[in-house]
Structures are given as C-alpha cells and as structure tokens.
Amino acid sequence: MPILREDQLRGLYEALAKKFGAPGEEASIFADALVQADLRGFDGQGILLMNEHWLKFLRARAIKPGSRVSIVKETSAMALLDGGGGLGQVIGTKAMKLAVEKARKSGVGIVSVRNSNDWGMTGYYSMKALEYDCIGIAMATFHNPFVAPWGGRDRILGSNPFSYAIPARRHWPIVLDMATAATSGSRIYEAMIHGKKIPEGLVLDAYGSPTTNPRSLYEGGALMSFGPRGYGLLVMVEILAGPLSDMGLASDREAFVGQLCVAIDVNQFTPIDEFKEKVDRLIDKVKSSRVASGFTEILVPGEKEFREKQRRTSEGISVPDNVWQDVTKIAEELGVDWKQAVRWNS
View 1 (cartoon, rainbow, N blue to C red):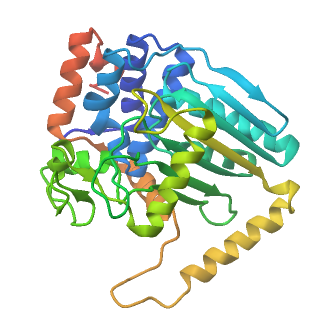
View 2 (cartoon, helix red, strand yellow):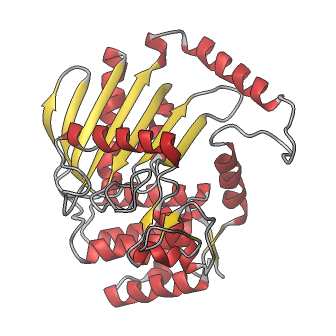
View 3 (cartoon, rainbow, N blue to C red):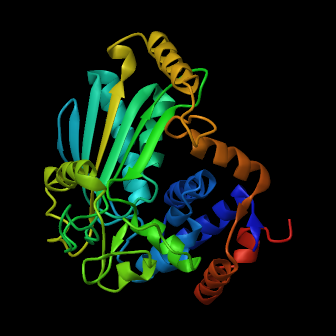
C-alpha cells in the first residue's frame, strides 16, 4: 500500500484535471478540495473515488472544466449562480467566496447554485468562511437519488450533505460535515472496495430489508434515512439546495447538482473576539464534562478530522494498492506522466 505526501497527491490531481481542460487555477482548486478530503479522513471524497467517480465523469464529459459560472440573479445579500456544468469544486469555491463578500457588507450572504456537479467534501466550503471570521454553512443535493424516505424503500432523495463551520480562538473551529442520510454513498463504496461489511441500519437491499452488504446499494437497494429527525433534515437540504436554486427534485433531474452556501459575518452581530471566547468556553465545558460509560474522552464536531489531518500531514496518506494501480493505469492511458506529477522518486 503506497503512502503519499499531500504535495504528491496534489500534483497528481492537478495533472489529471489539466488533462481534461481545466485551467491552472481550476486544477489547483480541484486538487486542493480532494487533498483536504484525503487529509481529513474523507477518503471517499478523494483518492478512493478518483477512478470510479471523478475520472469517470470527466472522461464522459459529464463534468466540463472551464465552464463559465454566471450570476443569474443578485441583490446585496443573495445571489443565484449557474455553474454551467463545470467542476463542482470550482463552482462551490466561487459560491462561498461570493457569500462571504456579501456577508461582509450585509451581515449575511446567501448564494444558491444550479447546474453544478459533485463538489466532494462539503466541509471544504463551509470552512472557507472561517478565513474571514465568518460562520459558514454549505449543503448540496444530487441528481442521482440514493436515499429512501423514512419508512419507505424507494430511492427518491439525494444523500444531501450538510456542513457548518464556526470559528474559535484557542481551539480548532467547530465543524460538522455529514450526509443527512444514514451515511453517504461514498462511505458505502469505500466499504465495498475494502471488502468490509457495513453496520445494519445504513442500507436497504432490493427487497426493502436492512443489510450489511454494501453491494446492495448498487444492486437495487437504497440508503436509509438517518431516523425520522435525520429524514427531516434531509428533506430541508433537498429543498434549499434544489428547488430554491431553480433546480428540480433529485428524482426529476438527469444531471447536475444544486448547492447552497451561506456566510454570516459574526462581527456585525457581536464583537468577533468576544464570540470566539464564548465558543472556546463552550468547548472547554463540553470537553471537561464527566465521561459516560464506554467513552474515554469527549470530542467536539470536527475535532477527530483535525487530528487526522495532523497525523496524515506528518505520516502521509495511505492509498489501497488496487486504487493506486487503477488510477495510475488510467493516467498512463490518458497520456499523463503520473510519476513526474507526484515526483515518484523524491
């Protein structure tokens, strides 16, 4: 199992994106989004899906790098963007940047996106707001429905990821990044390629019964809703990232993704230093709470991923042999010198 440095994977991702026509800046954004997913332990949003997802859609021209992102409607606090079917990572980055710009002027910025593509790790976009002392919220709904409604068995809804990021001072920011279904399709795929069973309660088989076999999702099954409350959140994301952006429902669309980015300029509501101190005190209180039976410590949302990023930055990112062989083989077929891109001998 090869272990790669962050810069090596970044070089590979950029080279592959450029091969499909991504300009330099777009290739850099695409690569950074995937590398950050790899570093934070969201493997199914990075290298593990490079062959079966990112390269698959790039080769089919279902994702079109270099597409123009246009503003359809705009006010001082909101905008509707049309992504033109381009790289979701590029479109999402532009959407959150615009949301932050509007928040800095109006307190809150809301940018809805239509005709985008999968943007990978949703937390990548909510965390963009942290650079400007803003709270970031990001969500997306996909054109390929995988999820059954609570109590149902038909694939009607997207896995609809949702993320928020809240700045702190002494501690890491609080970051939640989750599928609003019981899990994400990428997590199921990750289990499948590793030959692992999944916990019961995540997937229904083709007959509507819970299963531990991840392949069932690709054999007529469906992802389960995350209980009745998770189902309620899932429906909210479906609407805010879909119809609000003038997109149809997941079950109606043949292609493209709807997204929503929100930025809140904390300093226009309350002094940012006081806010961060209160967030830090909340984290202190949470982590000093008495530990329940079966636990050794209490983590706040995002802490596990920040720790993983530290570890992988230091130790490298492990890539399964079969995934690495597939990716490098396809790179060679495309005429991409992957050894040079990743500085294989360095």
